[in-house]
Image 1: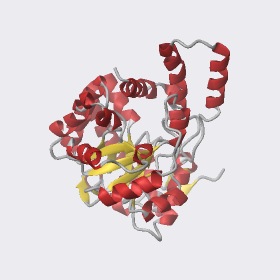
Image 2 (image 1 turned 30 degrees about the vertical axis):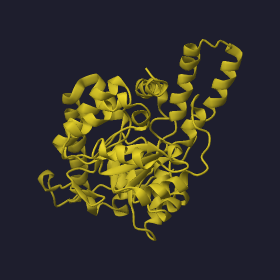
Image 3 (image 1 turned 90 degrees about the vertical axis):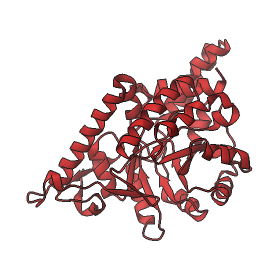
Length: 358
C-alpha cells in the first residue's frame, strides 16, 4: 500500500472515533428556531426542492468529500454513489491526488460514475497541489475519470502543518485556483476541511471566479486531532522510538486541536458578503441533524454538507442503514419546517431563528 493510500485509510478509520471531533461547538446552540403556533401548512405541503450551480435537487444535502485512493474506499464510494443516484443528492469524492500519482487507485473513484450515471458528482484536489498550476493532463483526467460536474478544491493548511508528511508551502494556492478556474470545463467549489472560511478569504476566492464556497467550520471533525493521532502510528511504521520527543510533539500539536473559525461565525460572515457578491454557500462542519441544517439555511446557507455521519452509518449499518438515516433526517426536517410555518426551503430566513440570550 502506498504512503498516500495508507494515509487515506488512516483518515477514514480515525474520523469515526469520537476523539477526532472538535470539543468546541458549531455555534448553532446560540440560536433557537422560532415556533409558529399557527403554521397554516401540513407535512405534505413541505418542499425541499433546491438548487446548486444551476442543477435541481430534491433535498439540500451534499455528501461531502472524504474518501478515495485505497481499497476500502471503492466499496464506500460505490455505496454512497448508489444512494446519491437513488435520491438525487450531490456527492463529492475524496482527493484524487492518489489516483493522479498512481493509476492503480483509479477504480476507487471511477466506480462512482458506474453506480451513479445521472448524479451530480464533484471531483476533488487539494489547494497545495495547484501551486504552480495543474498540468492539463491531470485536470482532464480528474474530470473525465468520473465525468465530474464540478471540481472541489479543498483548503487544509492546518491539517497539512500537523500531518507528518504534509505540504508546508501555501504561497501560490490562490493563483493556482485562479488558473484552475480559467482552464476547467466545469465550475469550481472551494471548501475548507474543518477550520472554516470567513468573508475575507471568501472574497479573494470569489474575485478569481470561484462559484461556491463550502465554509466547513469548526464543530465537526478536527483534522488536527486526526493527524495527531496518526503520529504514533507513523512513527511505529518507521520504527523510530524516542518517547520524550514524541510526547513533546504530541503535546504541541494538541494545542492546535481546537483551532479554527466556528461554522456559525463563518455563516454569519459570508451572509454579509452575499449582499455585495453573488455566490452560493454550502454550510458544513458539525452538521449532525436536521435542526442544524434548518438553522444553517436561516443563517444564509443554500445547501448543507455532511461526510463523517454518512461514512459512520455505512460502515456500521450498510446502505440500508444509510437510507434509514436519510429518511429520519428528512422526516425531522419536514416536521421542523411545518412548525416554522414555512412550506418551501428557499423561503427560510433570519425571521425564523431567534438568538439565544446568554
